[in-house]
Amino acid sequence: MSHPVTTTSILPHDHRDCVQTALQTAEQLCQRRGLRFTATRRRVLELVWDSHKPIGAYDILETLGRESASAAPPTVYRALDFLIEAGLVHRLDSLNAFVGCPDPASRHAGQFLICTCCRTVTELSDPEIEQLIAGKAAAGGFLAVRQVLEIEGLCNQCRTAPQSA
Ligand SMILES: [Zn+2]
Ligand SMILES: [Zn+2]
Ligand SMILES: [Zn+2]
Image 1 (cartoon, rainbow, N blue to C red):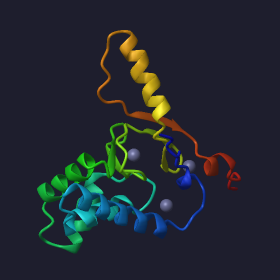
Image 2: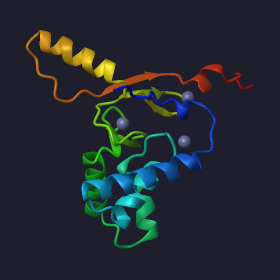
Image 3: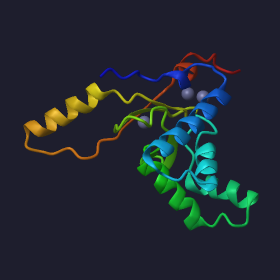
């Protein structure tokens, strides 16, 4: 099964479409799997999708705290756990932050291109890379269970941006 490599976030685009699509996809996915897409879960996902830059739990808590007094930290952490478990959100360990998954319907580990300049994250989620690593690991008798690749560098925009005077 071929799997499209998502590169949208590198190019300029109308990000409202990304957010809309992400929320719709999440709703459908939860419905199909019989999961409850509560208002808190929805709002947390929306905040994670606020941009293609990863967001920390603290920033989510701060925004939600301003919106409603009932947004206690455990509630937000539980919502994040749910979203990660459902594959709607990925956790980037190197940044201790979260990004929305553009393709949550397929189970994957994900490879993340992280721009060290503007912090934009692009997910590759290429199954060939996953299989390659799993194969290499298995050759040495190692069972790969979790493989998240966090690749640091410069995105196309930051690479080609004119040096500001
Ligand atoms: Zn976008
Ligand atoms: Zn993903
Ligand atoms: Zn960049």
